[in-house]
Image (cartoon, rainbow, N blue to C red):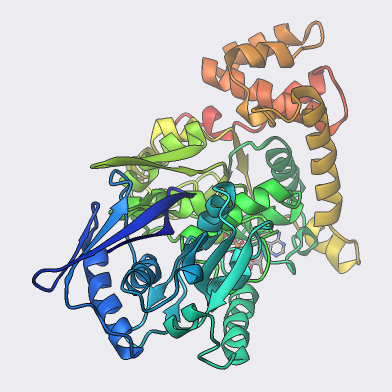
Amino acid sequence: MFGKVYSACVQGIEGRLITVEVDIASGLPQFAIVGLPDSAIRESMERVRAAIKNCGFSFPMQRITVNLAPADVRKEGASFDLAIAAAILVTSGQVPAEAIAETLLIGELALDGALRPVAGVLSMVDEARRSALSSVTLPALNAREASLIGGIRVRPLRHLLELTGEEAVPADERAFRAADGDVAAAAASGAGFGEAALDYADVFGQLHAKRALTIAAAGMHNIMLVGPPGTGKTMLVRRLPTILPELDDEEALEVTKLYSVAGKLGGRSGLLRQRPFRAPHHTISAAGLVGGGSVPKPGECSLAHRGVLFLDEMPEFSRQSLEVLRQPLEDRHITIGRARAVFTFPSHVLLAASMNPCPCGYYGAETPERSCSCSPHKVAHYLSRLSGPLLDRIDMQVDVPRIGLDDLAAVSHGHTSLSSAEMRARVEAARAMQRMRYGSGLLPFNGELGGRQLRRHCKLEPGVEKMLQLAFQTLALSVRAHERILKIARTIADLEGSDIIRMPHVAEALQYRSLDRKPLL
Ligand SMILES: Nc1ncnc2c1ncn2[C@@H]1O[C@H](COP(=O)(O)OP(=O)(O)O)[C@@H](O)[C@H]1O
Ligand SMILES: [Mg+2]
């Protein structure tokens, strides 16, 4: 007896259709799964066997061979349980074949036959739709996520017994509500997403930093804030998502898929609409940042895709962690090689970092009460932990000094400070300029300009080139620094609605290279 059903797995963030073939032959009782299964699939055999028996079906005492095809796709996880059980039940004549025709089956089985939700549903259902299957049959707790993909029927199951079409278990609405509650709680605690309640109006003074962050958001320029403790660096970066435009439909689907694959979607009912904001702790491993595991899951730099990756106190991160960030920052995706496959996750992020100027934090920011206690050697060692190549990916460096008394006085006199809404309006205007210039093709942002495009799109007003050259000689800047200053000047001109780059734009851009000017780097 032979039977065949469809299931799916995820590679990177794309779903792959997997055919589950079952052969039941006479012979000594045996149960084998072939097709490159990893240990999770061997465990799946035990769950499938128990679930079938505990539902009152009989587990055929024959030679059962299950083949997961194609064999060259690396498979992992428990999401094939339902498909394997269904294929066995249909092939052995215990469930009618119509129950599983033209449907994608995914889900993990508990030993009693209840269905457990799995990760990556969005990508798998999207693939089922592309493959023209008519429906997906999956755990009820994944149903909402699946229904985000239009054009395919979703059939939620709570229990293996429901496969026959009967409502074996009464609809338990509480399960849905509980799952929603978890998500609401996660959202309230700001689990990875920009919190709506934050606003730049909360930050007094620091207009220079706010201006720099507006430029960074407008042109997607990676940015580093440097300053002594307590000046509001963390506070400033946390508000960065509030000035980025909302995700468009395509971006929202892409980001939601990533969170689905990472198993971080919970029972969330819609597409993720807010820009991701990820601020991993400095003890994070390299694998945690870029993704890891035998079948890799996205790491922080992919979970921040289309949003902000914040490295607070950047020199505290291990050298190795910082080193692995170079590739995704350069390529805007991360490639992870494994024995039989290469996995790719998108990683198009705005990197924001913060650091003190030295270990004690007061180098170059001495006050009458507080002076820097670090030896020059200690300062040099601290800064050397940031690798040059990574610093090269950070377009803007901004000093964040202690705020002055006049800023505080302005606040106590009831002056309001620059708000997120005002800043976002500027960002959106500058982004519209970039869309007009680059179209909606591969190059939507000034921060991504390279060599030839740079020269083509960064037209300088006559005379400005000379001033720039002079600045280079006096400040002893590198060629890379030259390119970055042009890109930033391009964004500053866009913020002003100017097609041509003028003197004041370049002059301002030169200010955002504070680390270049310090002799220590
Ligand atoms: N410019 C500012 N406006 C309003 N509050 C500020 C400002 N700078 C610092 N603070 C206050 O100081 C606290 C510490 O700021 P934080 O962002 O953690 O500083 P840093 O990261 O530079 O060490 C903030 O939670 C905030 O209450
Ligand atoms: Mg801080």
